[in-house]
Image (cartoon, rainbow, N blue to C red; front, side, top):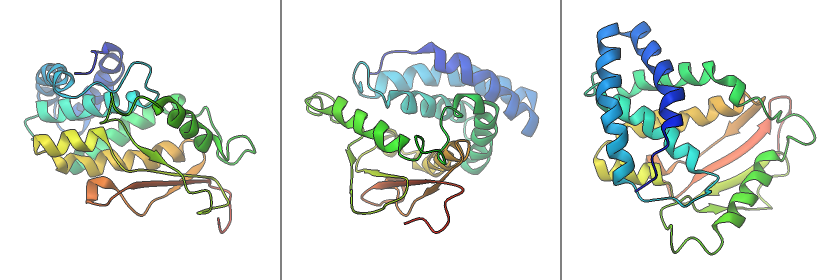
Length: 212
């Protein structure tokens, strides 16, 4: 199981509640949060630990809060509508994502360097934490920006096991918005959630013409 991290619930749940109330009703917002809090704790008990200090773990916590509250709504909220709520909440948290500018000389390869650091963290740990993301690189694929891909995703694994794979596409789509907040464009052809063998990430600055 994953250690309980209340800070993710503390940050996200009030914003999700407000978004649900605005788009649906106060009563649905209240009940979704109330039931979702229990769901969040249950999810963390079900999922495998990703390892202490895992630089990618925040992605899982982030996703599980949204999944828990969506389940708390008893699926009254459609996956598509939950995707809109995710984007609304992310937009309100944009200050968390403006640490990088994908158009700057330093920022162009920011995510490549970030994933190389994550790759280093995984060395010697994959046997103990086999469900964490498996990252790969192809140095010859692109010249511009950052390129990498994953061949496993613990969030997708969980959703498939629980029979709630329909919530994955909205979760995957939040990647594009996150990079937009950093003046970047995510070029993606594959996702594990769609049944592909990988999730590919090619991130280039939004001022780059005809990226290669």
